[in-house]
Image (cartoon, rainbow, N blue to C red; front, side):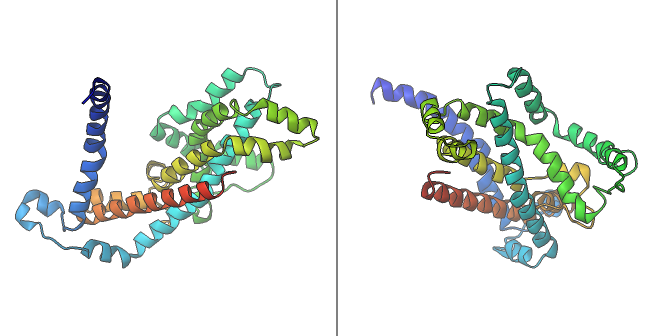
Length: 293
């Protein structure tokens, strides 16, 4: 082994060890628990632990709340990802304009929600969305619109949480898009402008292909993030009203730490992992097929 190879392994092995410790090992353990009836009784006496094979997965298929949680999670992802990415990209494009003043201030201000504590901000948003004294309903009342029960009406609970999540996470992608936009070739942009291309045409044929890889990365991370929503509905609605905001991760939490059915919870975790990996693979295939993305 050459000196360069030894140096490379010296830097690589600690990283691989950390990955194995925090990702591979928990995944293997979760898979092992998912084929058992591991519960609070097994915690007290290991002789109560039984191997059930795919029994936990079969039970999930016959559990209505699991399918409800899966449907809610799909709604969060299908609506939330375009909202978060669209808001981030639009804001980044605005900040990329040469006429905008105080750009560092706006970047820091808009990025701040991403680094604030999620529980604290969720509690604040519960007050903002309160039916009686929330600022949002006060603004609607000023316009002559009746107050909306944002967190108590199943029709509005998911949109309300999506509004909060978009405000909370869009700053990260905004910073990423801002960096990507700074790398767009200005000579191509100027050539398109001289050819008479409008703003939309320049964005479609110059800016979008240049930031395509960044856009794909943001999409992958956003999909994975929205599939793992938990703290937001837990703090703001406790999964209600009428289980309209129960997500897969929320269902897993209830199974594992409310009912102490840890084997079933591990099965849910493994299903979620497979779902995220599958969607990531699909997105990667789409990204390679449509390079302009």
